[in-house]
Amino acid sequence: MRINSGILGRRNFEVPRDGLRPTMEQAREAVFSSLAARVPGARVLDLFAGSGSLGLEAWSRGAASVTAVEKVPGHWKIIQGNFQALEGAPDLGRWEAVQADVYDYLKRSPGCFDLIFADPPYDEADLPRLLEALRPVLAPGGRLVFEIRARGAYSLPPEWNLIKEKRYGGTRMLYLEPLK
Picture 1 (cartoon, rainbow, N blue to C red):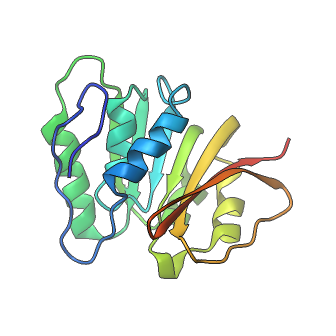
Picture 2: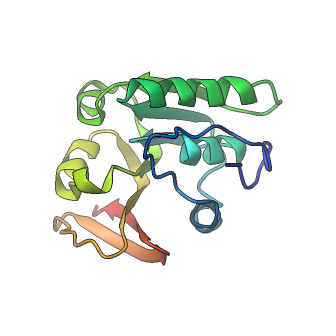
């Protein structure tokens, strides 16, 4: 796969070959086009990171920092390798790849993030649980982009606002923010 745009645009990165479902280029391009003004200087959290594709795209487009969280050891190693292979360009922010369960990480996270991407395995997608865990780490005015199966049902707690919903093939992206 490759990064669509930014400092690292058109650079390739590795994807695990063991059934991982990375966010496709068309969907990433659309997501980042809609978030264009929010990415530069943002503190980004990429949960259930897989290959790190969403974090890498944000990093290439000027995010101040990217933290990619992945619990599968082989996937985590690939994420580390992807960031390391692309380091060195001027104006790239900081990055960190964390091998941990997403919920364990969120309980102990010292950070506050402006933009959070969550692309859990479809069978593990529990939006209400994730939203509850994210509240302490999402910065005021921050956004969550949650990826689910296009035909999947979801429930949204009343303290969250669905900004928009977009479909890309078999994938649906939910753009969410907490109510004030």
